Length: 104
Image (cartoon, rainbow, N blue to C red; front, side, top):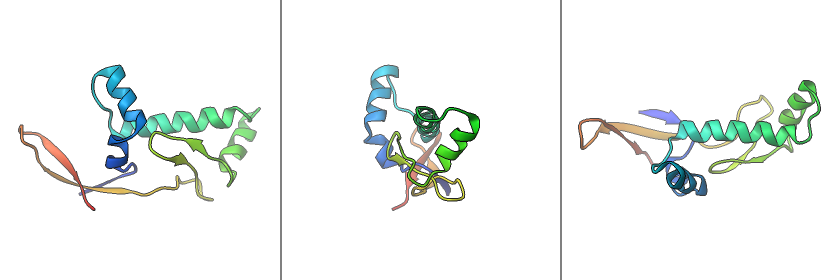
């Protein structure tokens, strides 16, 4: 079992995933979604920040939020991202590899 920071079902049904499939011919993983979210958080904060210090302050503001791949991007007071963790069970795949099955 592993924990991932993006709920796979939400990612699979997201507009972000649909656009990725259209652009690249296949879907993206939760890692790509997190990279996208990090970029969106920075670009959103940079829209108002004028220095490194103000960027840090903007990201640390409790009112800060950005639009992510599957949900709004918000942070806790300690700087961690707010949001649910998805637990996945690793099982043998049909074609010899592994598959990740979401636990509900």
